[in-house]
Image (cartoon, rainbow, N blue to C red; front, side, top):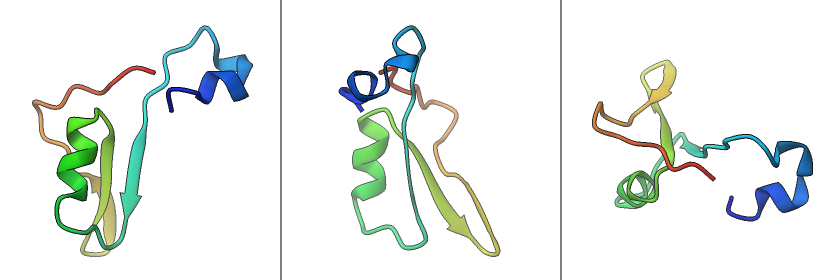
Length: 61
């Protein structure tokens, strides 16, 4: 994501945030993404939702 704006210059003046999503998330991957400032989207029952807690601060790219 740090190079995203190089490829898509129309986003040069905008704040970009990132996310990872998965139906099955391997142990530790969610914590890694969280600590890198990415939203974590996962399946809960029949729906998907953002799994980050209220303390999460997204990284701006």
